[in-house]
Length: 168
Image (spheres, rainbow, N blue to C red):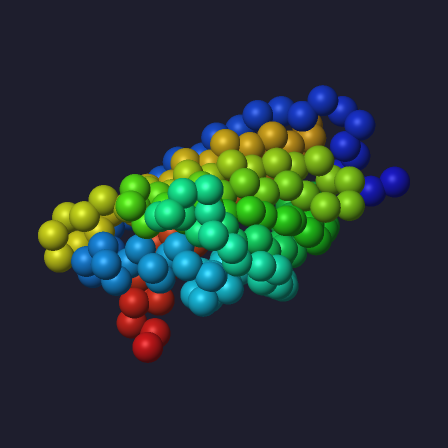
């Protein structure tokens, strides 16, 4: 049996954070939203173990694009004594007119995690505010990880977004 038994009813969790980057929205939005930089964005997380871009295609409206990808994260399940790898599949809709990314993912191979992330971009002139809200469902026990460890990791991940602006 998998360490994260999916037979129990899922528990909802929510994580929100915002950060301000010292670059205009026309630099920040493509970097954090488009397929060419997506692997670099996810790689800012120390939990990322692999990434695979599956497809990009036009979205439901002229200003949207759909990006489909898979990734694997390694997460602690028993504090520092145990870790498990969780493969995820994601469909991300990028809306350039609304400066918004709508990200929906689910775990593969029976773990039972779903995530809906909304990432918005607000122009502050020479800077950009990036806000993310994550709504998710996870098996009991894993939802506790989401409240503690995943929240901390999410905040640290977002605070590293600025590194992508100075990487080139």
